[in-house]
Structure formats: C-alpha cells, structure tokens
Length: 519
Image 1 (cartoon, rainbow, N blue to C red):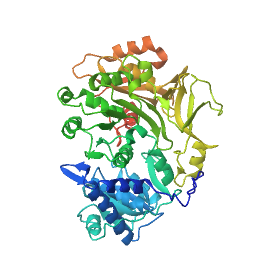
Image 2: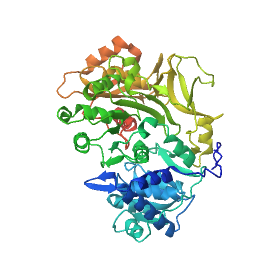
Image 3: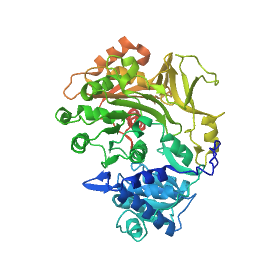
Image 4: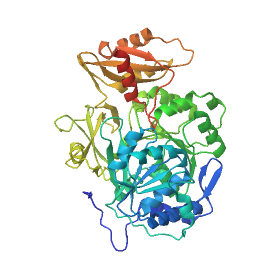
C-alpha cells in the first residue's frame, strides 16, 4: 500500500521513525527510571538495550521490513520492547485485543499475514488455540512456555549495540482493528510517517517530563501515551488492568502526574470509597476519551480532583481531531462540558450533510476530517476504504456540530442513532439526561428492532447503590425534558455495564441481551 501524501526527506535530514527518536531519548540518561511494573523498575538503558537485542533476535529468525508481527500480550515492559523492536526493523505491528474470541483473533492473524506471533506467557493457552487454526511461521514467547521459542532468551544472546532503523516513511507501521465481533474485522493502516505525526499532536503532553500511569490495554490509546512519555524522558507505570482501588493506590505510591481513562472507568474511580482518603495531589492531568462522557460526571470529577481533566477526541482512522482543555472544564458550564473542545492545529473539520455539502455553524451533520494523521486505508478492503476516504476527507461516521466559537460537539455515531416514528433519537443526549438524575451513576442507550423491524429505544441504567430511583421516575424525567419520542420502550437496571476490551460500554453485548429477552 502506498501513501497518498509523502514528506520529502533531504540528505541532511534522513527519516527517523518514532522508535529511533524514543531510543535516542532513552540513551540520553540511561540510568533513569523508565518503566515500572509489579515492583520491577527498569532503567532507560535497560529498556533500550532490550529493544536492540530483541530486534537482532527477530532479524536472526528472518523477520524484517514489510512483514507483520502480531502481539498477543498484556501490559508488560517486554510488550513495549517487542513493539519497538519490530517497528525498528520496519515491520508492521498488530496488537490483538485480548477479549476478542479465539475465532476472531485467528481471522485477524491470518488476514494480516502474520509472520511472527509474540506471546505473553499468560496467554499461552490462547496462543495454542490460534495456532491450531492458522499457521504462523514464528511463535515467540516473552518468557518460558510449553510452546514457542523464548524471545527473551534469544534476545539475551544478542548484542545490545544500536541498530539503524529500517522503516521508511510510507511503510505501514501499525494495523489496528475495530469491531470484529461480527463480520470481517476492519484493519486500520497507518504509515510510520503518520504515526510519528500523530504522536506530536499532543504537544502539551510531550513537553513535560512526567509519570504516566497505564491501566488500560497497550493495544489502544495507552500505547500512544507510553511513546509520548518515553519520548519526553518520563516514566511509565504499568498496571495489568483497571481496578479503581489499585489505580488510586498507584497514584499515591508512585506520585503519578498523568493518567488516561475512558469515561466509564473514570466514573468507577470517582465512585470508589478509597478516593476520599487517597492522596491524588500529584495528578496534573487526567486525560479521557474513547467514548462520550457525561457532563454531570465530568463536573463531579472536577470538584473531586481539581482542574486536571483534559479531553482528547480522535479515531484510529483519523488520528487526533480536537481537545477540550483543562480551563474549559467548568462545572458551571455543562454546555461546554458536552463538547469535544476545539479542533487541533493542522486538522481540518467540516460538518456535511448526506449530499456532502458543508453545513454552517450550529447545524448537525457528519464530522469529516482532513489531516496528515488520517489513515492510509483499511487493510485489504479497498471498497470500504473508498467509502470513508473521499476526495482527501475522512468521513468519520460521527454526527456533530461546530458552534460559532469553534467548539466541536459529537452528538452520536451514525450507526447508533435510533430512527423512531417521528424522528431520530440521539443516544448520547438521552444518556446525558438519564445521568443527570442524582441517583443514576451511568447509563447506556441503544436501539433494538421489534417484531416489525422497527427500532425501539432501550436504556440500561446503573443506579447509585441504595438509591430509590425507579423506572417511572426516569420516564417522567424523559417525558418532561425530551418528550414522548425519547421515552424508552424498556428501562433495565443493572449493577454495572459490560465494557469492551478498551473500556467502552459494550452496546453490542447489551443489544444481544435485550434481543434474547425479547425473543
């Protein structure tokens, strides 16, 4: 695949990938603490050496530029090193979401032509399931295992002398998959040039040396934040998964300055009793994104944690789109909290109707984006690529509006918008309304077709423990604020919402559950 945009490299300034830049930074102060995981404290020099040793070990196995390396791994320091090693050789990387089914993972591994599968020992059984379905030339394990070669042992035999990076600007650096629970997973391709550009979009993160806590999967946004932290000379503290008590304890123990959470995880943090007595004063920035956030809960977060919230809106296909800065998180301005902030420098956003016509400020339409971080395309899906990439613009599939002050509001996903008799129900608007009830912690709204194939509005609500809110009270709230069109056909109360691998509300699972109850 070839990029449509190309930056000319002069002889004086040869291309340097994000990995090479990060390795250079790691080499500047090799004795400093770079990564912390379960009591292990790894220096910058140790991490740099491991990357070069791993790269040589992969090279010795014939793995090289233009081939695909797939990671089946959790949040380990060795996971970071393995990705860097493969990208240093010019390989394209895919990091599997661990909660996908074995069948879907196997389909991805086969589709992207995986040459080497790098496995976390904790996922050895799943790796065996995958390799029983699809042949992979090299199975390399980050430690001893029954099946596969021990990549750490192989790396230990290699020199730590620096390797020159082999990647070129237009080579595919990463393939990130969306969906995958039904149909053919979409592999989003980004070049080394684009990936490097995306990592420079968050300048305020890069300029400050900080301590970044990672408690969501490295396969998602946390992987980018690791790179930004290491490129700025900071320290990454890894947790295997999100647990609110462990996150609060780590913030206090490690004097964490930066944290990224998806909104549902932020709510769990706010609702945990330990937040009342844990010291979070070191926290300078809590970035959130990945799905819609409730203005009510954001205001609660500001009151509890101070002016540290920072929203980042983007997509794997588009890169970064907009940010809502800390100073815009005013608890007394729920209208501002409902927005995704202002468009990033170097990014163009147009709001367009179904015919592709640009709409004026305040009008609702599809958010279309043009920037250097827009994906190269979907892996081996040219027709789908052509649907979303038209005339140099990425059609995001998000519905939104830009106001006169330049603030972007994301109203809904086109696919999530519920078409009902009389008009459209925008799920995030109904969720915001339900969440505004003082006895509601969180909600998820989605459409379920009835026997006549007409979509009905379903709401799943997480109430405050011990609260007395009931279905009738919520119906009255909706009727008074939004009218009968927004009234749910069914309201279900649960203790918690199911989440996807990255921490978003799993509306597909909720929809399947609702459909099974209706059958």
